[in-house]
Image (cartoon, rainbow, N blue to C red; front, side):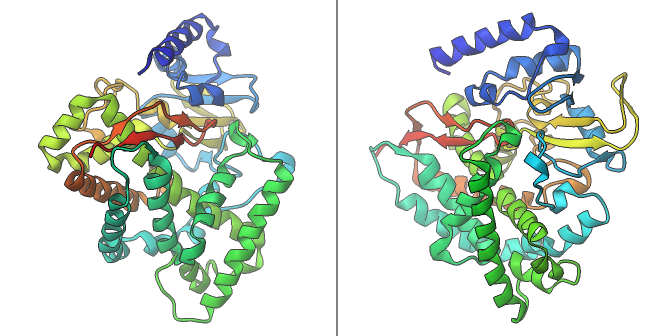
Length: 418
């Protein structure tokens, strides 16, 4: 941590403790971008873990900040609804793209189950060798003794190639997938915006048109394991082609789900190893630590900071009464720093015994269906890195996205000694 960051964090601690408890707002995206959000969550976990904020840019909401309480909300899906959205903010003027993560039963299962074989054990076994080959090509093409942006050259490229494989997407257009993913998550609903909403929607429906053409091609062919074919041939999802908002919503969900978790964990993991050089030493000494390190990276980075629910009935939690209709925000990023669950949670420890207990993938019926694919990519990447490079040095401060949802890194300047 550099001096400027340390000073900003010190000021944030002072502000967090000076702010009246009922006015603490952990939804401010500028704090996430500056990494000064931590003291506000620390105070809520210690003093008011089930916290109600009456007024914010996103309206009133409850913040659930401790691991056990997040788990309780996650697994009480009959009380806490994912409809109409899992993001803290409400869609502007009612514009909504229905998808299975933002749906309750029966729609949740009807839309989710058809695509699950696309990331199942058989599919993972099929593509592991392919991913290892591609990782090798990406790494072998990196410059030595020269500064470059790790995000562009590795994190984005690897996840984009993986998305193209899962969708069997035209290879020459694969970077459209990352573009659409970034566009979908850069919205005022999470405290960020990259363009006018009208232009954003226009581009998203261009995405729908592109996929509709692929869908029409594949519905007349034998089914395969790619996401488009799986949906086009399944009884529960084949009609989505005639419902553009639902088609686009589920496609964007799959694109974002396949992009953000892995992409930002690739960047965050390298940053963490540089911030904790003793852990890099451990890794060099024992490559068998990689699978556990993958879990610790995902805990440490927490690629998605929160998920939102709506209470369908009154519910008692932590001595508080959450009322029917209330907005409830589960802060994964806080739960993964809960010292009642993780010893020394602010330490990056690749030998952490309960690293797999992180909550970054969620729990219950909405647990991330692509978690094994994400873990596989990270594992293979670090196996191949350790075969090639003694060290990859971070040589400048990361540039982070402004969002309270995606814990993203846009730039990570690095150098590989040659």
